Length: 288
Length: 155
Image (cartoon, rainbow over the protein chains, first blue to last red):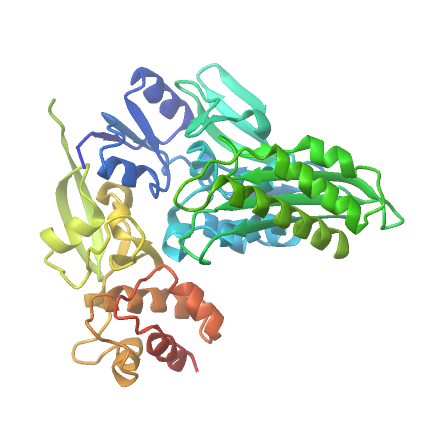
């Protein structure tokens, strides 16, 4: 690994200033489970490394029954897995966190890192997309709120500009009578990058048969994690029945734009999207 | 370009050390090269194999993906800190009793991953044990005996 100057600021302001003064030559360090691999391979050669772990405002999870959940950027995947609010009100996030890496990776890897690396397969992205999460971004000029759907621009690229840092993720309360599920397809259950990831949030009407609202998000099948609104619209307001589920799943598959790589062909991924979307909808609707 | 060195302290196996380190040194390099604690192994160097597993404040991490400056001031446990004198730690003894060691390269990481699990969950089921060591590869593929050894400590 090439060397660099190391900074460990204690405030977000300081971190933003350092980042902006470095004029693109700095990288932010959170858990380091992605960044340090890239640095060891000389794929990334920062002159300055800004370690965020001394900034208290980037740590912790808060919950308010009215406002919902606030997950600060440095929360680790292990913290998600053990947090009572997450387990009680947003279990999909624990379910997704459980599929990331290994214990060792989950103890270091962070929510902010998972999102800011902006890999198409980021496991927390589809669940947070169906939860209608938004990013709170801090820059030298103050705070910005960005819906997560607008956060990812391209592989490894977010909407963040120089000097901006992801501070936290806000997650509203889940709708009444709703359930959210994340299904990940991989070859093994640990240390696996998603071949396909599908998140579904289903809310039923009081009759518990009609879809009040459905949200569907896909990972690893497009340049960024995506919502598939067309598939959602086809199911909205319908009585949940196998043919409606199949229709929505086929639309989701048709809107996926996967690539072929060593983990799966484009055709295979598209088929997996169809299967997992149908499975997730069925499962979510059944257990509400 | 000149890069400065950084003064840090580390507590390793309950002993305090002070160093001046370059920013790009990993915790693994310092443990093996500066402290000579070569029980911790480097396998893949990219967080896949778990041979470099150490406990930082009781939590298992990959020391190959950790800069030493990141963990300045914290408590590190390596495999050398587990036994008390000649008395092996019960997990180490269980690995011997169950024949859970073949070439031995993965063993320090396996034992520490097991310790992190057993400290938080004293009586794990087989599934929990398998998930806890999912980030530790054994290329002799002695997993079954390793799982049994860990479970025997918990029961």
